[in-house]
Image 1 (tube, rainbow, N blue to C red):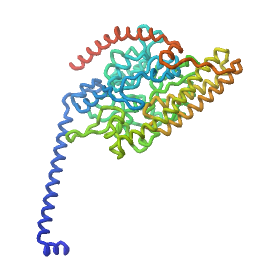
Image 2 (image 1 turned 180 degrees about the vertical axis):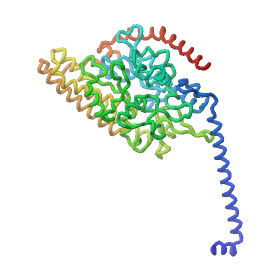
Image 3 (image 1 turned 120 degrees about the vertical axis):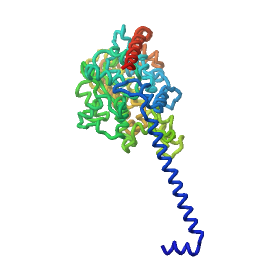
Image 4 (image 1 turned 90 degrees about the horizontal axis):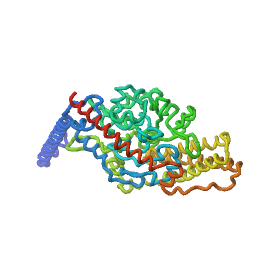
Length: 498
């Protein structure tokens, strides 16, 4: 107090300066308080319901009436204008890009057709278009099971509620053709009454329950990854009922799941060339991401792929779900202070290392399948081939697991390079075993590898009649899909009247 009194006595202007400072501070605080109140009012106005969205309503456009900002960004998942070094959102034929894939998946649907994944808004269209789902009216191999729809639409929870979970999974893919028509959207992740994040797919809940974990009690931040984990995971169709199941009972790394599959003697298909009992990895993005530094530090999938955006003081989540590389300033630079070029180079460096290992693994695996075919052709017996075929199964499972989740080379670079390294090791060991078998049957020179330089040549080599497959699919799309859409339109009109 003596100091302040002294200042007033010796410097009369000090009082006026102190008064001015106080008034300025009060004025600025008043502006801040008014701004906060205004933004809160804007938020209340922005989220005032326009329509009542009923539970299990699958129509994204109806939800969009209440949440136009989120819906407008969701529609941007239809964009196809971005391409990174290894991926993007464009429609790209991955078999044409890498014909090795045709041989690796010989005898399985992925060797007919496999495109680069694109935005969620295309989920239904791409399911209908792909040759993997076959032509239900005349495809001798038959269409895929109904379970294949599970990750593609908010119509799925509605159908599960209508039919029961186990019953929903049964039957052929075409059974739900007129019912599942709305692409991945609002109802897959949100409760319409509260807009809280919600797990709508039972397979994820069941997988955690078997580990003694109730994920319905997860935190909001945890659910910002778990809603993605409903689909971006490894899974298989269990038993005759094709019940969707996650193979996590022994753990969630590549070796744990391999052991799980081996113990139940599961296979996705028998390879057409090598006759190996094969595993097809789906898209284990969630599992691989858990090995990376971001997930270990509590960063969720949505933090990077659906960053927050502020508009007029209202904070919302960007539902243009996409590669962070197309949105570095909001996805990465909220935490990292490096330049966009530096951050992009960091991603590409990790992807380059994984890609080099991937191509080495593919080279050995393609040769292993062809060499195994040669061994069968010259009279090899089952007991002679068992070890080599098991090695092929394990090698390709690891290769597929590493590449099928797309972003894993960045999400968990060290883990992916480790997995690819073991894939190469096992593929080389399989070829060594096959060399012994071939030698015992009089084959003492290298097995000739056919020209597999193009998708067409590779598909001809493994025996696909692509002209017929494409013609069958074209007839299916022309004759059956219009009938599905007509029924769906009538159902939607009935929903509006309810």
